[in-house]
View 1: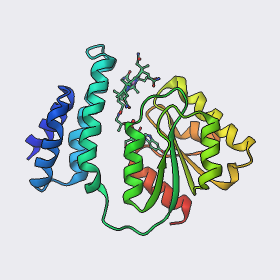
View 2: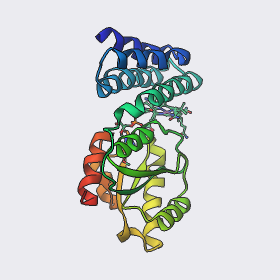
View 3: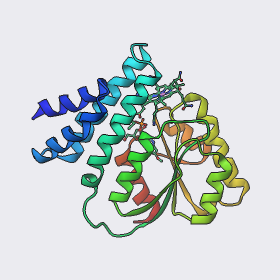
View 4: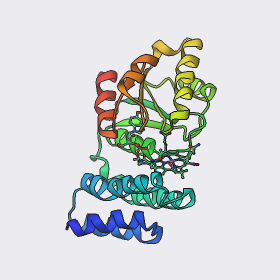
Amino acid sequence: MSDLFEKISGCLLEREAGKIQGLVKQALDAGLAPKDILNKGLLAGMSEVGVLFKEGELFVPEVLLAAKTMALGMETLGPELKDGEAPKKGKVVLATVKGDLHDIGIKLVGLMLEGAGYEVINMGLDVPPETIVKAVAGHQPKILGLCALLTTTLGAMKDSMEALREAGLYNNVKVIVGGAVVTDNYAKDIGAHYAADAVRAVDLADQLAGA
Ligand code: B1M
């Protein structure tokens, strides 16, 4: 069984986009838990890709292919991560902040929130503060979720918070922030709440939305 987890993470490392959906399906058919397939297969592989990227063993085009492989895997796994018909808990707007092109983590957060019963509006990546403000004004979500993966885009997260304040919307919405470079202290500094991963983002959303 663990063999399948290794095959899935290996598939990401080798960027075999054409094989990943078959492997995820095989793991599901074998009765492996979707959360294990995610954590021990897809995320384990992606984390190894990150290490090789940092060490200079992999380059941007290869990481992009790995990300595409991951996205295809998530497409197959996504519906299985949702626990049937959850009660509707309200709207959440999500965005990766301006200048940041990483969207795998925020998509995962979105999937888990949807599975927990939230209506998710994902604005995508590289979203400027003014677009975030417009989305909050228009959708009036209970929760706004912001993601940053780069040290250089943390400032854009802060700018987004400031834009919310300037528009008088800060008190209308609870803000959750996350992503590899975000810390609890940083979140507090900019007036937001921090979640380290997608599961914790759902718990925090429930707490903040009173769901
Ligand atoms: Co980039 N990249 N990347 N990259 N990339 C990192 C982030 C990096 C850590 C790699 C490294 O050096 N080890 C490094 C950042 C270093 C830093 O700033 N401290 C880095 C760099 C440097 C870069 C470039 C600058 C490289 C270059 O061009 N020279 C460049 C920047 C482009 C840009 O954004 N402007 C770049 C580009 C890319 C690709 C486009 C090739 C690709 C992204 C493709 C895509 O997303 N569509 C990419 C990838 C894939 C990575 C790594 C390898 C993997 C990221 C990922 O998807 N992880 C990454 C290394 C790493 O993180 N270990 C790396 C899987 C995902 C599920 O995890 O997003 O962390 P993550 O989400 C987690 C939590 O963080 C949390 O929940 C998720 C898990 O449950 N979370 C939230 C995320 N969002 C949340 C929101 C919440 C709550 C929790 O509330 C709302």
